[in-house]
Length: 106
Image: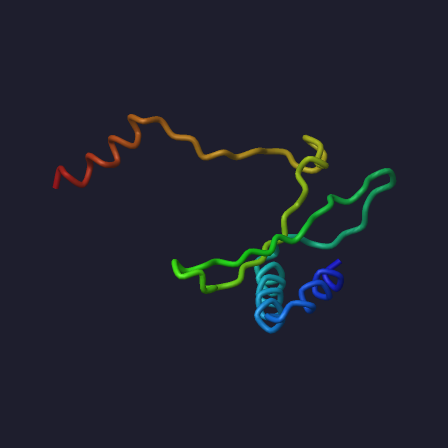
């Protein structure tokens, strides 16, 4: 899959930028142990993923940087099989008020 994505990006005139960004993302995934390769049990299938390519622009529409991410297609996951917990950062308004109030005390 990575080779196919790389071949698609090599057809653009900015291939050296995309090549650099792809290598940085893959190195980051390996360095941070984002995922590990393993054998699938009988009857299981792997979770699909896709690569997201983005360009960031200045106000004058010149490109500031290139970004790439590998994203799992979460709709193929099953609860308690592919994942066990879901975390969503939620806070109450009064908690935010307390945090904003604390620095004003001193």
